[in-house]
Length: 201
Image (cartoon, rainbow, N blue to C red; front, side, top):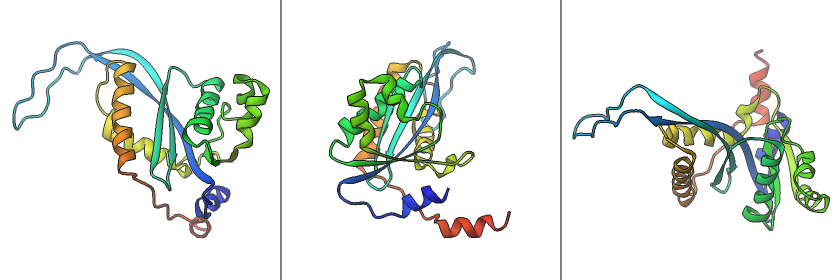
């Protein structure tokens, strides 16, 4: 915990970027009956029944100091899926910076996953650009990407989304709006705060 909190208090150079990563899933659901049209002053009316239409994995990349985020929608969350996400982060989103990466210690979130997905030379090149810090077990709340997933859920996903194509479009529109306004996080929980708080337990 203190390692992650110390990272959040660091001063970053121009050639470094703090990125937090987390993932969640989203079930797609189709309407069985056509919803009634909305009238002025009334809420939307739709049937409580729906048809399940698969589940998508959502990878959240969030640079909390820069107010930038990217969500990648995939069918699964395997080692190779994670490796391709990190390759995109290194080569597309932050091509000229060292990436200080905060994430949970899931079994797929390992440098060995890069070698499962790419040739050794490419895997090594990507690995050398990363400085990884893992949140502790039962400490996922320390990952600021989890905060951004919560915002995504409240603002975009709390409704019926029928298929993955629609999900990708809706998330892309949400992402663009959030990135245009560069909404960042003002993290205030420090190592000193944690030590005081944990003395109570």
